[in-house]
Length: 171
Image (tube, rainbow, N blue to C red):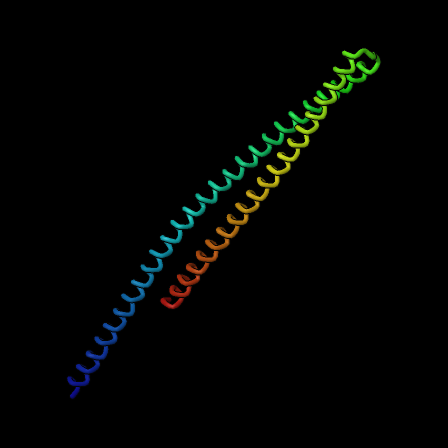
């Protein structure tokens, strides 16, 4: 009878031990799966971070190009203004003489001033349009970067919470 009780206890302990081994094995598998998922997410995050850095560099280059374009248009604008001033001075000098040739030159200078003023207005329009387009592109890319960062941070936080919860269950 004692042998039978001992055998039953032994069998019960053996079954408990087998069950505990299975639970540990399942948890080890779960931990490995979470670790693999975490590694994958970290790799994705790293790639996304590289994409973010590339986009930031593109934004920087676009901003620099926009500034260069603006400077170029500004220089051209200032040059055109100087030409207008020069032409106005020439017109002033021409007014003092009343020969037919002088009147003809005056008319030509006024036409040139009109053309230059038109060019200036077109350049100002182009500059404003380019600045608006560049600002919109930069704004959109900055928004996309921020959304991407938020999405990846949420995923990483979620997986870390799952890993922490599973580890707490194991402990």
